[in-house]
Image 1 (cartoon, rainbow, N blue to C red):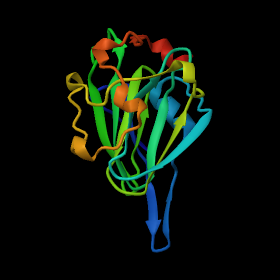
Image 2: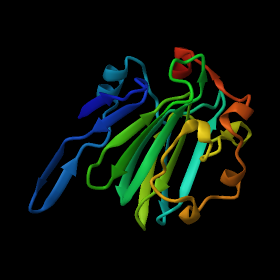
Image 3: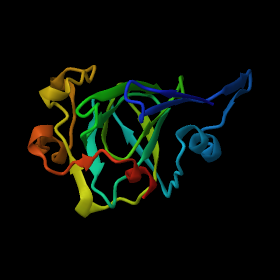
Length: 192
């Protein structure tokens, strides 16, 4: 496995080693020991999630408040997405900036989205299956979001807005500047 820090160093891309031959392939998708060694802190994933979506579906930008904040390890099993993580940690030198990475069933890349980041993705291919691990359970009362089309974030979702398919919830999310539900820039969010 190859771990790569992005332009926002807390967001990490993981490139697994793919072993393939005429029969198919084998890939190790998760190694807690190697991930923790690279990050320098513990991760205790407790829940796996999976979604299937059509091209144009956009989910996000979502996050959960402390103490229900989540670190996510995301990947695509089938198809293709543009995956986005936005730094929403007040006081962070990268506050309001984002990382966008194309995750596909072919490249098998994964992205680690730490606590203190809003997360979303847009589906670029029909019948895409997206899977992710989280280190905290879903909490409705702590569930929050930011508008996917907030101009201050300058996210290129790779598809025109007229083809995007959003949930009713995601069409009503506030702009980043209009929410008070943000994180302080503290490393202890990772070790809660």
